[in-house]
Image (cartoon, rainbow, N blue to C red; front, side, top):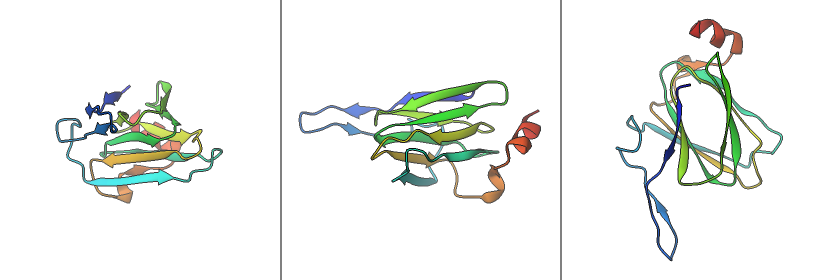
Length: 130
């Protein structure tokens, strides 16, 4: 499956740690940054795939599960450390669930918002990748 956990370089200090995401960490230039917060624990986010956009998800606080599906295989990835993120390439269906109290999901995207890049219907996703 075309996903990968990436460890974010960090500087450890007795005053607190500093995680750094610069151009060599991700295989693309960051064009959009957004974050999810105050998500109820029973809510589901995502429910789509991207045709061309890649995304890097980081649990800045708390934890949540990312269910990824490439049409052949389904995998659950739990994000719960602010110095590790999940890189999701194109044509991967993703759903986010099981948000802990206070969870914050940071998303660093390879492109600006473009509605025509989204595949929001699962059947359409399956047909597009086969």
